[in-house]
Figure 1 (cartoon, rainbow, N blue to C red):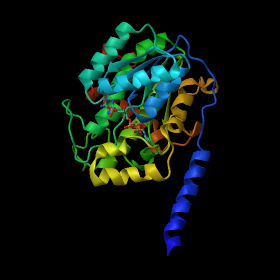
Figure 2 (tube, rainbow, N blue to C red; figure 1 turned 30 degrees about the vertical axis):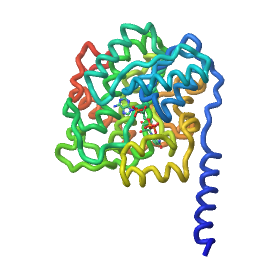
Figure 3 (cartoon, rainbow, N blue to C red; figure 1 turned 180 degrees about the horizontal axis):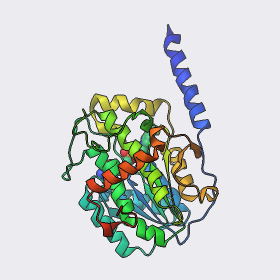
Figure 4 (cartoon, rainbow, N blue to C red; figure 1 turned 120 degrees about the horizontal axis):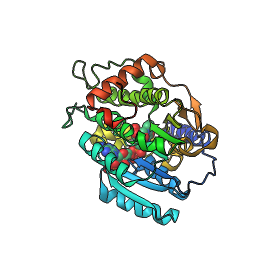
Length: 323
Ligand SMILES: NC(=O)c1ccc[n+]([C@@H]2O[C@H](COP(=O)([O-])OP(=O)(O)OC[C@H]3O[C@@H](n4cnc5c(N)ncnc54)[C@H](OP(=O)(O)O)[C@@H]3O)[C@@H](O)[C@H]2O)c1
């Protein structure tokens, strides 16, 4: 009888070893002295490891986080581990447009340049459809709208600092969003569920990247998106309850740790060989194929226009505002 338990345990262990063995690594030795990098959601998981790596390379690193106390503890750890004291915490809640506007405008006032923007903060989605104070669906607000607005406001500084890079952390789950209605991004007409909301928000990350790269052609700013892999982080445990536990299970069976999970973000932020690559989707530090919908130029345009309206983007806020 013992082998009924042993065989799956061994099989999972072997799969886990293979999964980690084939995972991509960023091999770039590039230093970032004199450069500034901003990472949203750097108080945990993939964002924290990305920030640590960029700090080790000598960059000034801004941890853009909603929980300042937690983020300051992480900043102190990063300073200790990297020996780089130029690591600061700034408060932003990507689910709140007023917070994003305030934060981004402070960055414009206080930073002389911005070389790397990593849009990493994310939530798995809420179990029930929840609206933010701006009337946006919470998962979409946190994972898409907040970063859409933030990036637009910071473009002026990124352009001034060119060559500069934007890295959007998406997910393989975007493949499971089979259709997107730009007129119903907040699930007002169609039914809501947890998976739909997350998958849609991650498809929006891919489409936003595509449209950004087209609009930024010739500007010296590149934008790429990525799937980090299945990574052991806090993300699914934040869902809570039995459902959160069930979601977290794969993360404890076949998965990477956060350091390995951050490699593709780091690769896109620093590697020399992709300096001029833009609008692409990466997995394991290699260019990969996103979903058919994720590469649909007509859809990326429609999403951009709908997002401009939903975040009430003002003409003076973005060099890419659709006039
Ligand atoms: N882990 C995976 O297997 C996996 C797979 C595919 C894609 N991803 C993507 O990878 C990114 C990072 O996720 P992770 O796995 O590292 O998760 P995590 O450990 O939960 O970290 C998420 C980070 O985002 C922050 N955050 C959440 N909501 C925010 C808000 N409203 N405003 C500002 N910051 C907010 C969190 O802040 P707090 O510390 O305050 O909670 C935390 O710093 C996400 O975009 C996720 O979709 C992850």
